[in-house]
Length: 225
Image (cartoon, rainbow, N blue to C red):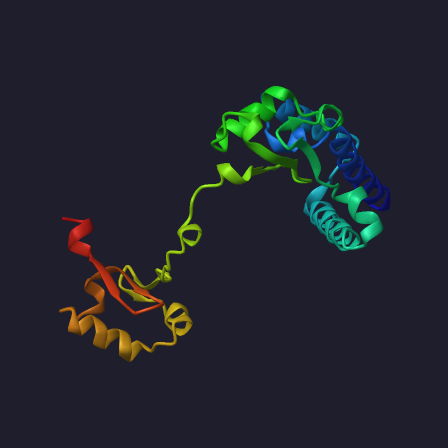
C-alpha cells in the first residue's frame, strides 16, 4: 500500500511537470494530437500502479485529493507560484507579434490568428496586447480606437436592468431566492394573486426582478398545451 501511494504521488507530480514542459498551448486548444498526448501520458504513467480492491482505490483518491490541496496552498507562495501555475506571456504588443514568446510558449502562429479571429478581430495591427494566460486562455486587449462604444463613452446614463430571480420552479417556491430578494412567501402569494394566480401549482416558472420586483410568470399550459 505504501509503495503504491509513493508511486501514485510521484507519477501524479511527474505528469504535472510534463504538462508544464509541453506548454500552455496544450491546455489552450485541445487539438486531436494534444488530447491524445495527455491521454497516453496518463495511461502509460499509471500502468505500474496496481489497485487491488475498493479500499486501495479510495485511499488513492484521498491521497491525490490531498496532494491537489497541498499544491493549491503552495501556489499562494509567491516564489512557488510561477513554478506551479506559470505566468502570463505577451504574444502581441502594440500590434506586433513577439516571436520569441510565441516560440517559447509553443503557441503556433495559426492558433494565435485563429484565437484573434474568434474574438472578433481580423487584423493583428488592431491589437494592443494579446496575453497568453497561465491556464492557456488568450486575453486580448484591443487598441483604443477599436474598443466598442459603450453608453458611458457617450455620457449616456443607464439604469441597472436588474436580475430576474427564480421564485417558483415547476410549482415549487424557491425559498432561498425569496430570501435573497428579502421577500416572504406571503408576499409572493399575494403578488401571484394580484396577477390572477390563486394556486401555486399552476405556475411552471416565475421570476421577480431584484430592482423593481416585477413579476414574470409562465404556466404549465403554456409549456404543455
